[in-house]
Image 1 (cartoon, rainbow, N blue to C red):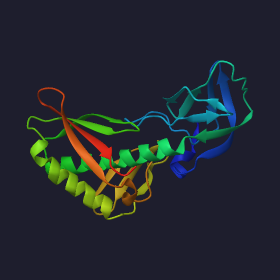
Image 2 (image 1 turned 45 degrees about the horizontal axis):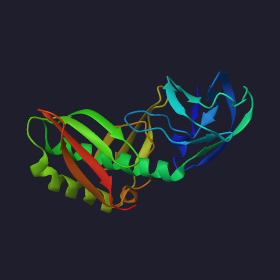
Image 3 (image 1 turned 60 degrees about the vertical axis):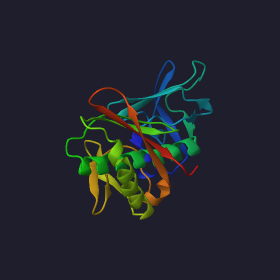
Length: 214
């Protein structure tokens, strides 16, 4: 099992570890700070032993990293892992902003059902199955989320079941939500946000989230 150091310290940008397995272009590490796409959050970008990671894939409790074919690594090699910190930090900020938007909408609109989500470096989106247009409520939703951000509240991120690898985030007094992503320490780190509604078909509503503070 790949030990996921990004859960212990999502702000860590460099790591020395060992290669545990190699299969052609793919390598596995004993531990990692390099997040792989999951729950809608895109993978980190970065390097392993100086080689750019072309693909990061979850495989059960492991993560496989695809490098260029000429990487030359073998099991047991000590390697340096580096991630693109500006990208990781924007993903963390947009991820938590999207989580707050989702919770506020679900608390205010009982019929809202999440049917999709994606967290990229430039924006996040959440898709809902919803018969009514969300536009009339968007200003109030954005204000409610911004208040939570501006409150600069501590974010708890921990295991609910360590053996099963299940984790959650929590803002005390607001919500506790299952999530295995990388999380900020405080809500204030998100900064100022903007929300936009997109029409993606009848009975569906998409809310896009943008960071206004670069």
